[in-house]
Image 1 (tube, helix red, strand yellow):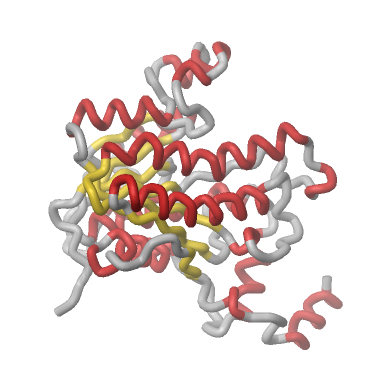
Image 2 (cartoon, helix red, strand yellow):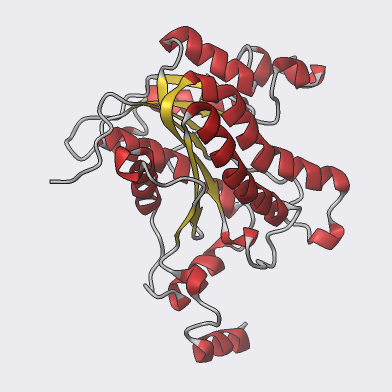
Length: 306
């Protein structure tokens, strides 16, 4: 039987701080396929995350299909705004939630994992990171600082991750990023430069696939996931309406699940996808293929009701 087999593989998922987002779902799917998994966690959220794990508050979410529990090999501090510790301002480095974590930069995470597991010790690296401080602002009302912050945290951080983790990954490794349809189409309300950041991310996936493929033999892909009510997405404010709209108008008229995104990530990380690189795969029940709403009458009626 042909199946996803990641036994003997080691994965790092950057951007896991709870059990409610795509990052966690991907980590769990990789573990289901047999991989050993480490995660990178934003320092201000790391204490709560570690406490929930220690108290067993996440045991149900960590339980795998065979009844065993996902045991994370390592949890390392990671703030993807900073390539090196020297890039972080002094007020950030000295703040309580950062100072106790040591080197929380992308290079710091790579160094910590290299020290613990050795050179070329990873096979899979996942970028599940995004942030736009002005995401609620229309692009016309977005400042240069907010725009560049969104691009830096949500797009360039993937390039930095490939730069620094490329040598740490065995030849033929897999890098994966998470993107969104706003990279291709207008999504009103998804502002602050985030649509630009996602477009840049998708372009970078193609370029990095070429460069990392020629340099190390690595594959680089992205998943464009449909709307999902993670903690980060819920902060935008209209995620519930987006989920309902997608479900109403997709070829498969239902909402996506985090598990579906996780399963796609596990496939892309596996030898089954060894011929796939430089690609953006949509996991959105086919919504991206639609040119007009499937239920025009329903949409108009909903608009009338407000």
